[in-house]
Length: 324
Ligand code: A3P
Image 1 (tube, protein in one colour):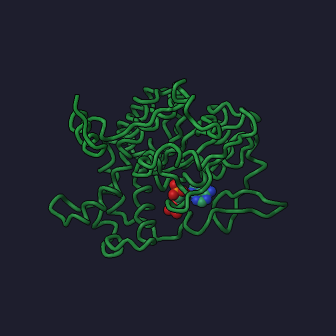
Image 2 (tube, rainbow, N blue to C red):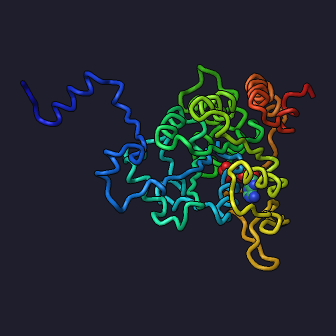
């Protein structure tokens, strides 16, 4: 029998089992042996039962804030390091472990009819997120929100530009989206980050293959923006929320903001901040044309996928696939 100091032993172990280098956290409450040794102050009932996965710039924050108004839903506490989103399943926060994640959810959910939820818009297109999320939350309901991928790409460009991204500040939107593979790496990287999330069907397929179609709901972001109460009616049905509330009484169009906002008292509304609903010039015609062509195969695959899943095809998708 031979042994070694802990680090050397760990090194040896991962040499033998390289597939375990990337951990996959399961739910401790699913295993009686884990439950027995887990602290009494921890409770799996705090884990979210609903994940809003994005992608970014589709109206995911509006959706999150509207859902947070529902008495049956409890949002995560904000994270100071990730702009309020937890971004657990998609990046190194995952390596901080389950305790880190659980700290963002109230331990004392008043009754079982209340469900915790979180929104991290970067989950949608993150390679590892569906598998990791399913390992921990196999029964969670997954909500994606989609708008025209061209509009999403343009909004994302404006977003990182206003956050001072040096590449976005140095290059026009058109230069970024049309950069070819011989372009400098920072430009290509930015192009990929701008365009890849919009390949919706590719990413959705990975979520469907982990969770199954019945656990996935696709919100039409354009419909949520124009008629939030109707979109939230459908979503409440999908989540089987009780009580079923009428958002017509809770949201009001704010002409100054140009969006629906939360009614606070009487005529007053509370809207999302300046970073949501930015004012910027319309997309150049040549960029719109380029993106329409670029996204055509992806949009066609999305349309097929939605039909296969028995879901409605949003008007903007039909429009993008039309010849006009
Ligand atoms: P723009 O700022 O480009 O207009 P996300 O929250 O996923 O980052 O999405 C931001 C986008 O949400 C905004 O993009 C805006 O168009 C859209 N949006 C939809 N409904 C909104 C609402 N009620 N209030 C503010 N923005 C909303």
